[in-house]
Length: 231
Image (cartoon, rainbow, N blue to C red; front, side, top):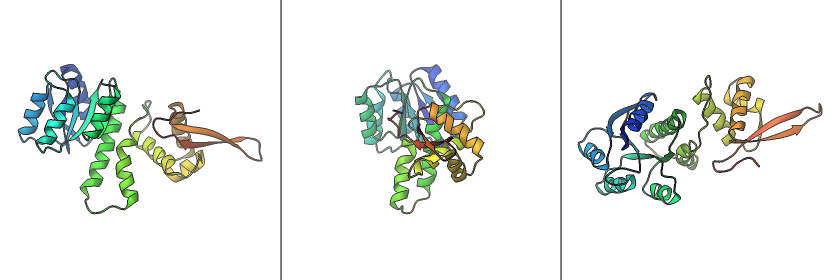
């Protein structure tokens, strides 16, 4: 179980965030704090805290100052920023202080769920211990980055299947057809097509056409890294 501290000065927002966390298997909200002092006191109380969902705008000091104080005290608790602060200086400071993710308000449950699921997968990998080859190191460092721009899934779509299709595309050396994606993911062609269309609409894949002897074009898909878009 991953123990979470939710920190937000707005009590209503804190309750919503806590309710979102409670809906993700493997996560439990230990406490909701509404100031930096309250959050620090809870961490120092010795209650279990693995992850802090941290707002930047707090009444007594900002979230990044709280992270600095925690690090100075030797607290290595993981942090995901959940804030309306959009300026790049704050984003850069959060990165340098070791925040694992940065989620900009307003966001959907799907957006937060993607961050938490990626964090959970990372924790499970690191808890195994031992040594890692370069490919495993790359996967660890890319685990949370891959969730930086999640796709909000319509009703009836599975986050697990969406992640499976995403991984197939990201690991491919070049564009793949719908059937190739289906074969590599171990799903039906119809299911692969549904998720590929969803990713295309979200601007996360580049769609190209390849014409064969029949004259009917074959759709081929390539993953677009976060921060890029379709031409």
